[in-house]
Length: 253
Length: 109
Image (tube, rainbow over all chains, first blue to last red; front, side, top):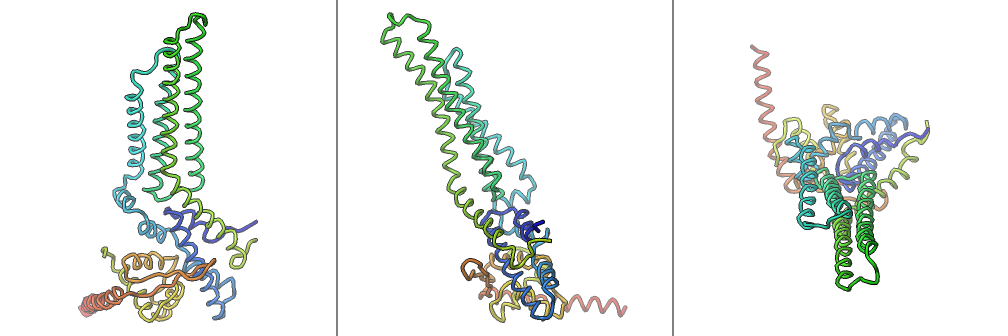
């Protein structure tokens, strides 16, 4: 069975940005290799030398905590010191969602009446959820300093899903408005004024959905540059573990 | 500079003293401290790295990456580091003298 790289646990546990994680594991790995070689030259067996080098140099819990404290953001250090990190993140996410929802309600007022109103008002919930999702990612990035690959995928999946839902609901509401308006009248008697009023209604509900999607896309765009950089470093970390095992660490038991 | 405990301060001075003799990689610092203190002081479980990174953050040592692919980091002491080593060494010597005087005094009593 493949043995885990001795630094995999360090990389997993260290809650700092990917650049710092990569720097640390590369630094420790190079030192472990060099110390192992030095101890072998001094007469230790390879196994003894490796064990000693790992014991001396691989950061344990206490060292990891100190490294996190050193490399975390100033905001993270203050919040961690005050021990209200989780509460702060939850409050921030809740506040962002509430504010976005209230702003959407204010903009959409008085809003359409009739069956499509439900679909239109559901956009308010979508906007609140988009804001909450972006705020959650922002908190992870700028307070914890780190958004792991799994969390990043979750962020995009949620965000993409909410944007698609906004567009789909808007299209449905617009179609509904049009269908109700035109299904109940005789086409021969439709005036241009009536048609214009229907187009306005359809455009209104479609625009609300479009605005929701654009709001979501802006959140996406705000975080994407940092995400791309982090993703590239994460790939380098993955390459490090892929290439790093065989020469120094036995790959099988 | 932030306030540090006595043991952290000693660790900092150990690292600075090694680097005062010339640039070194992390493992060389750990090895050198162990050898030059006759095993009285040694860094275990990666405790060296928070110290090195703190000294680097404060500008008392400078870290430099070398090599492509497999990178290695070399540390060298800065002017601020040398000044801190001198001041810290003197302060520690004073504290140790006071401590030993107290310990020996209590034995005599």
